[in-house]
Picture 1: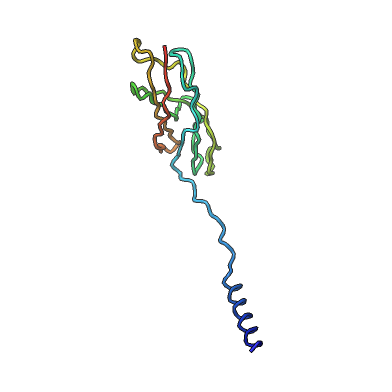
Picture 2 (picture 1 turned 60 degrees about the vertical axis):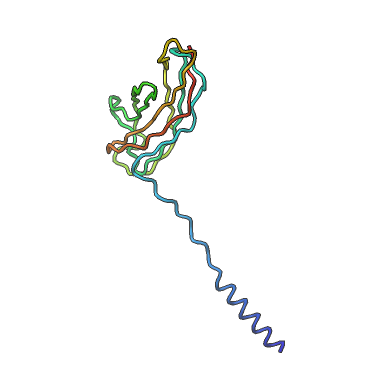
Length: 153
């Protein structure tokens, strides 16, 4: 009887060990060839019209590395003032060598100079910005929206 019990324990242990398997390696999803951005920070929270600059930090990703241009006349980052829908465009230098196809990510720092008061009689205004980027293939990221900033006279 004891020998039978030992055989059962041996069989059960063998089954338990054989059912254990190594975890499959974690494979990250590939980064899309369409660029993506997200707002990391925007500061300061209150600016004086026509004087203070707003600093915007954007995290970017691009699966084939074709963000930015070599020609400084080719702007690829766009910031829209949602109060009056004016677009300010910015040059982004090439973030990976031309001809390479490598996934890239990082942080872009954008400085918005001299934000205006739309209503000169207002004691303050709230402004949000919409931001998007275009790669060399002409693909646009989604539009991201910043938190509100207060503009004072």
